[in-house]
Length: 111
Length: 117
Image (cartoon, rainbow over the protein chains, first blue to last red):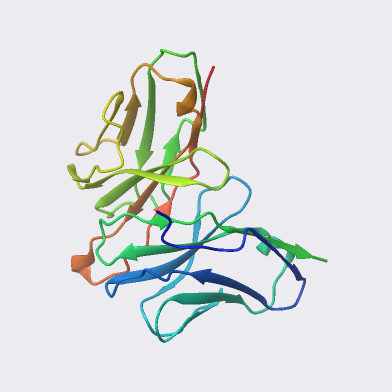
């Protein structure tokens, strides 16, 4: 059973904010939300993660709802190089625990 | 090294032949993971290691697939008697031990593209 659901595709104008939603309604208290992206068929690239608080780093912001059943990844100023498949992942805390990948959102940044 | 290294980049095997894939984790990382990406967007977890010990093998097919991580050697994933459905990209990832108080982020290698004909 999928732990996350994401829209299959989205478009975003270059320079605008890209907001990528993710539903994880069955998330448990010890599961983190991670976001990765995959450009072409390269290895997944880490973007950001969080447990229950909103997080921000140099790449993106992560907004997690209070009930933790959904989250949004925000790329504040999308560029053409942000065109990729974005994966929302849940994972039980603990270094050796596996990632449960969703099917991802294919984001296309349009000039 | 500073990146996860995977070899070979591409591997072509005839059905029934053996395939062996290698992964060198980032230096100092004690956890290694193998994932299989069959269709374009679908990842399947196969197995994880803590140093040379199997940590979680719940995703490994019971037959034909095996993996190991030995000291001072790259980790390996071996498929005996490959089948057409084994055609996929196999990604390796590594992460640091939580005990060091560092992030548990998994860092992925570039993958090995296996084609079984």
